[in-house]
Image (cartoon, rainbow, N blue to C red; front, side):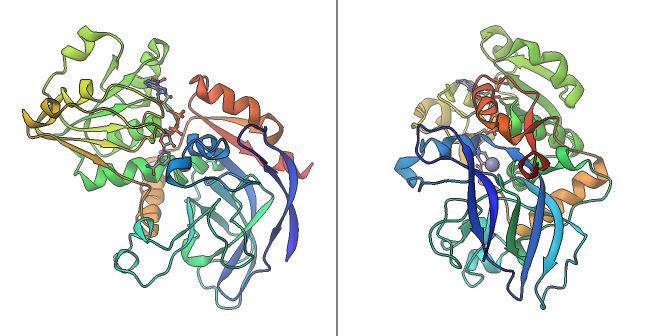
Length: 351
Ligand code: NAP
Ligand code: ZN
């Protein structure tokens, strides 16, 4: 075991502050990574503030962070994919049981015994796992991803959650040429979703509550932008979408999006508002609409997404901040006051 500096919250109301956490010495199949950048996901905020307590309470202290990019500093004797000096990335999972049907199909995100990157029982050290708001991390090589060398590291870090969480459902529901796709919410997930849907060849419409986002959404790859608070703009698209990806983090009216689906269209939630959303039966039955959900993606698909982003030059638009500004960044994220993802420069923790 060795100790590293990290940022943690000690209760649902306390701000994040510097602390020290243990990491294990790399085992045979482990990769030790010095963390260079870590994105700030809205899930970090939901978890730090215990907003999802009904689905699993947060254990304190919590060290959030699951959009991790860094450099390999040490590898175990059986590691074949990485060597010291390589770039490496870690997303939302660091382990799974590898024996269940989900794991056998490469869908580790659905393994009932998977280990999430933070706030999940730690099989090695006891307690819970600690995430990427820290100097380094030690992860089994199966859960470590390769980073395409052409991508800017600060902007690529958010792909590890925002990228895979939008890529996986876009692929699963067959988004591509000839399909009309909506992306709701132009935050961390949504703005990457717009870029990916565009790169996949779809006709993309971005929905935002922030009128100032209009020009940006077109620049990001949207073919059209709708300010969702404007009923007339919504009405123009009634009954026309094959697929809508909803990334919204808070209460909102999903019936108004179901009304925009074509017959047999699907609205998929990836956003995870803490409180249940209301849905009217009539918004579903009239057009044989489907309401679905999706969570991150498997490890093989995460690598596929990173390679796709390398080929198509897709990364997040980021504001790079020192870790000392993380609490301010949480407040700004709540106000959609970031274009469009915060990426923490972890050198600030080593200073
Ligand atoms: P984010 O950067 O804060 O973006 C959320 C966006 O939702 C905002 O930018 C805003 O977009 C819109 N929004 C926020 N409040 C709203 C409201 N009251 N009504 C309508 N729209 C609203 O968050 P994120 O990091 O992208 O995460 C989004 C959600 O996905 C979170 O709940 C997060 O926990 C969840 N998530 C799920 C997974 C998964 O695997 N399923 C993975 C990662 C994250 P506009 O300003 O454009 O309106
Ligand atoms: Zn996330």
